[in-house]
Structures are given as C-alpha cells and as structure tokens.
Length: 278
Image 1 (cartoon, rainbow, N blue to C red):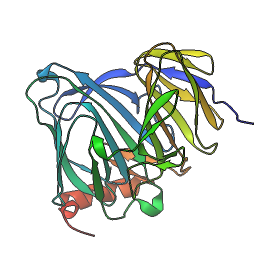
Image 2: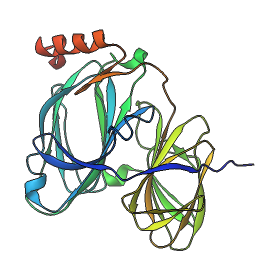
Image 3: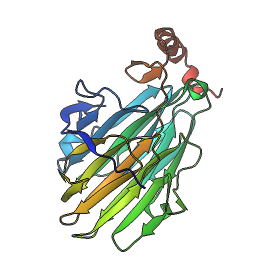
Image 4: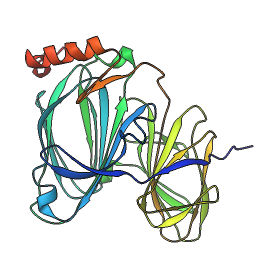
C-alpha cells in the first residue's frame, strides 16, 4: 500500500538579488530553510522588466556541487572556463557539475520580454566533490514526456512510468515538470528514501488534501507517493533526491565538507586552477 507524503511546511520565498543584480525569489538557502539535503538552494526568477535581469550572472566560480537551471521562458547563454558554451531557449535546461572547480557565466540573450526559470543547487558527496567538471544542455525537444489521462510530465531527470529523464551523469535526482488536467487527481511516485519538495508553477490544487497555489513551495514529509488534485490548470515541478548526510561547509560559491576545504578552494581559485583540467 502506498504511503502518501504530506506537506510539512509551505515556503513563500524571500526577495533577493544575485549575480550583477538579478532579482530573485529564494526559497531554499535562507534563514527559513538553509538546506533540504541534498538540496542547497532554490531560486526562482520571473520578470518582464529587462532592468531586473539584463545584467545577468557574469563570470563567477563554483566548487563542490551541481546546478540545475530550468528555463520556462527566455534565453540564457552559458560560457565556462573549460571552453563549454550553450544557449538555453524556452523549455530548456542545463545540468552542470562544478566538481573540482569551474568559472562560468550565465547571461540573458534577450533585450525584452519575460525571463522565467529556476535554479537549483544540488550537493555532492565528499567522494564526488573534486571530480572533473562537466555540463549538459537540454533543449525542450530533448526532454522526454510521459502522458497519462491525468497529467503530462516532462522528465528532466529521474524515472517516471518506466521512462528515463534526459540528464546523464549527474547526482541522481527526480526533476519532473508536471501539468495536470483541471479537476484531475493523480499520484506521482517518489522513492521513500528521498527528500522531496514541490514548486507550484501555476494554478492551484491540493497535495494530500492540503491547498497549494502558485508561488508556494511545499516541503514534503515521509512517504513514497505524492497525491495531487488539480483545481484548475495546476502545474508543478516535483524535485526529490537522496540525502547525503555529510557535514556541509559553504561559503559563497563553494560547498565542501570542512572549513579547511573552503580555504583551499579560495587558494586554488586565486592560483588559476579552476581554468585547468584536473
């Protein structure tokens, strides 16, 4: 018998800015919730005001974790110190492992219109923190879709209904963009050993009988399925991952296990090692 996950708390997020002044709403990585192991940070950006996003995220370093950037609307270009370059378009996503160290930029490639998306930081276990950096761009047409009578789900990562998501070679997480048909109910399975949360992208409905609406981020408790009921055109992003359960030391763009490793990250960055292959 399935065990439905219930909502433990609903985060509303906090307005902040990052990069060169890009306005964001931060849900995870705040005083309200510093982390939800293995997830370190979750930012949402949504604006049709170019002044709030055109400055973008110029060159900055990372070490010790992965990022998942999902673009609902807009265009964003990625460049990094390993020579990678890619253009995300509407419906596209990028998975990036910073690993031992990378310097990258994420810059809007539009002068007007809506910029809407999410960036998630996923921790890495100690054994993977100093691995070779790599990344994968996914355009909308490359992301598998699962269709049922109740919903349509885009699988960026993870497995749903026997279909494997598009991301390869990254820390295993579920990342599903699910659009429900009005009035429909459905269960989305999530392994019992994974932490889980939901981003309510649009519409309203219920999780295990508790109301949810656009802009909410419900943190979910234990169980192996999420029970949804859509009031209208409910759209959610389901995210889940196995907790790492290791000490976390984080400072700015670096996430390691000890303060000493953070200090070493600064030393290596200043020595130019983030631009070199391991």
